[in-house]
Length: 73
Image (cartoon, rainbow, N blue to C red; front, side, top):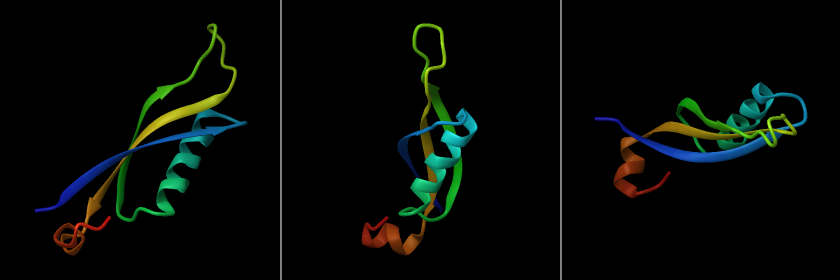
């Protein structure tokens, strides 16, 4: 049975929310393997205006059975 873990990543961009999401995924991929999905939890807005492009992302990844046995991620 596969184990799936979820981490939360906060990322931003000067360009767009899409770019901020790509940045979150790229940063998570530096230390996490087997990423399966990314869920954007929230986009930041201030005073009814987009002042910056920031996202809170939940990144899910499958943990290898050897990693689970050794408690490594």
